[in-house]
Each structure stands twice: as structure tokens, then as C-alpha cells.
Length: 196
Image (tube, rainbow, N blue to C red):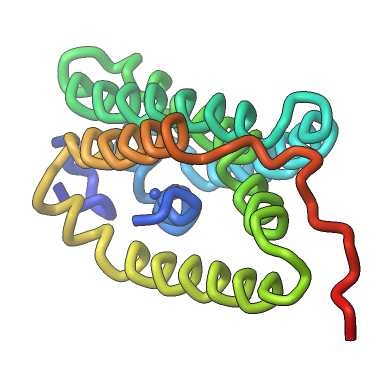
């Protein structure tokens, strides 16, 4: 499947959404959306709205629970994206399933996996190593972002409409890792200043 054609046939999780942003117009075209540019603008609006929602919820709900809720939502959305693409030839309304799944994917991403890792990195480390940890996290994020941007088209060509099943598997792996290995960091920020 060539995503940029009309053919209908996460990596760290915070960069899986990069493929949605980079390739959204092509993905919407592949899904049969007649005006994909407007759907892409809608993604930007949803991104903004749900980032604000996350800011309002982060202190009440906790970092880990928001992260897990976002990951679980992204998992199901990735599955629905692939199902929508696989069944598009049989049911024309599957284009709306794919579009809705993409919008919800971005919503769930901005509820948890988008902003929450930056809170957690800051809260896992004391003041001394915190800047280095944040710099390494940002470096890792951008390297993986670059690799996704570079490789997604090849992966999509190889996997066809099943490409998002692959990403659903990656999201599931990160969800399980988070559930079993990542503690709640709410209120754990080391506020004791380092002695000079």
C-alpha cells in the first residue's frame, strides 16, 4: 500500500503519533476522505483541545492512570484504523471509521502519552541529574521521530492496510510495560534544592 496513493489496500510511544501528523493527509486520502486537508486541520484542533484537557486532569487523575488510559485508547484506535482500511473496499462508510479512529487516537495521545512522559522524567530524577535526563529524553524523542518519519512509508508499503496493527502491537507492549514497571509519580517531584 502506498499511503500517498488512492490504493485502499509509537519505537517510543510518543513518536508513533508523529506518523499521524506527518502522513495524515495521505492516510485520509487512502481512507477515502474526499477533503483530507480539512480532516488534517481537525487533527490539529483536537490536539490543542485534548492537551488542555490533560493539563486540567493531570493533578487529579495522576500521571500513570492518564498515561495508561491514553495508551489503552490508542491501542483500540490503531486497531480500528486498520480494520477501517482493510474493509474499505467492502463498506464505503469505513472511511468514517478510519477518520474517527484517527481523531480519537490523537485525543488519547494528548490525554496521556503526549504530555505525561515529560512530567514523569522530571519526577523520576532529583535536581542534579534532571537536566541530563530531560535532554536525553528529548534527544531520544527526536531521533525516534525522525526514524518514524523516514521509515513509515516503507512500513506502510510492506504491511498495506494492516500497518496500524503493527503499531497497535507496539502500543500494547508499552502499555504492559507501563502497567507492570512504571510507578505513579504524582507528588514525587524532588523539591529539595541541591546543596552547592
